[in-house]
Length: 208
View 1: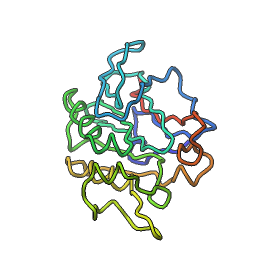
View 2 (view 1 turned 45 degrees about the horizontal axis):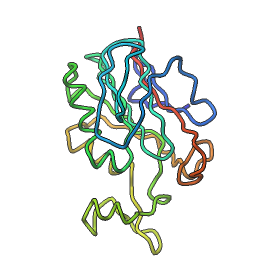
View 3 (view 1 turned 30 degrees about the vertical axis):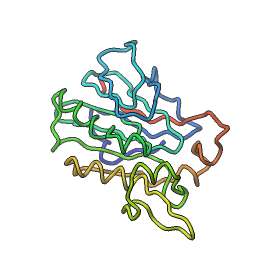
């Protein structure tokens, strides 16, 4: 399990788990993830949750949990106002605004942009991520700064793009776990093995 120094603070439990230890948390609260910008505010355990790609709460004891296998898990915390969030950010969700919508949902619960910390977890990195035609169509910019040449192909810098979107909305406290899920076999990777349905967990919880 990997931890972010930014989120290792009293009153908050978090972790980016690999495929061997990813089910350590008790009663994880998970979503049916759909690569959207939709955010759910969780108020209690057992709450019915619609399909979405991010969770926020200001209630203790709720393990907000993401499932990923190359997409970027992003965990958020405002330790001063006791608000946390978790966002599943593949390129589609990040482009649609899931990160910004998560931050706005946290602010509605009392968080402030100055106090929100974000940690980008293990995900696919540019050397492992050749750009697809649908990505080029959506971005519609031939020389997008997060399209980078590797050999004869252009590749996409997912963690770099996620960090850019967080900075654009005003976050300054941003950490990144520097692990490429495609390269590191301790992590599930859809691009390395698209037939494997397994995912690793990333979670964050306000402690009681």
